[in-house]
Length: 348
Image (tube, rainbow, N blue to C red; front, side, top):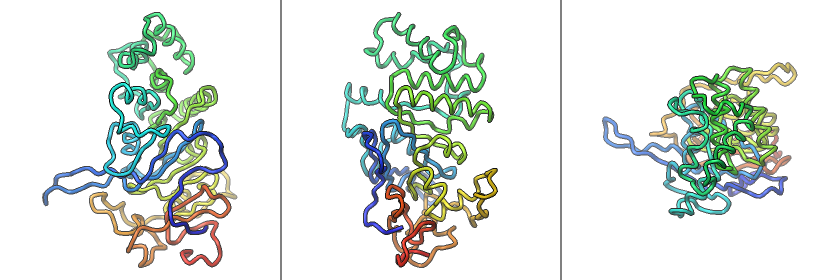
């Protein structure tokens, strides 16, 4: 790896147009405690890109900020710093009809299909609910009814299921219904927040295959949030690894999984189960607890748990280093692992 002065999270090797650009996004929350109010840094300098038809996997421990990032991208939270651009447009500068039109492009599939659907509504009412706000999309009742049946068929449910309520469906069927609701506004991007973690393994595979088929058919982009590395490796084109509010490594799925550059990513990958003895890594056990975002460590956020940390790691944020074999593979580290350039000063 070689060192660069400025992060470049743009994926290489593709001519697909960019639908999302996130630059230096930070999000803080004010939290009250015994010693007064403190600032919780949920996101700190996030940089991401997403291209049309691509799946970006977002991984990291619980509490690292994945869901806060999803809510920020969904325009449910306003960032304190940095910019978010959908198709080159800053959504936080829009109002009224312009903002409503942009919101159509980005939808979400939630983690728990038992909590995200209203049991008092029928399947048809759940799918059609977004059209109550976006009334111009299907203004005629018969068009809405026809589109509901079409969406049910598209996600693998029967059109005759339109009058059933969520409690009459299995977990996998409920999540299919949630996907149909997300598709109701013909989005360009769907943010999937742990969409299969509440499902049985056999059902997980069915839902993942459905998401892949929909992407191929509709040219949708996904941001796929998960703690299950095997799932991410199966579905993602690129992976972003998150730790304590920062993206510490980004690259193609193959590069990140097979040649992790950041020590945290290396530890994550060593914990991933595999049936292939030849590729099985020695388990790396991290010491200590994840620091509190109320009082994050100075310099590198990971240094308090890193076996390779030195004095320089505590002084300032680490530089961005780039994989010489794959320029789109970058990490923030003074002591990167994996494929490195001989003689680089910051190599351990």
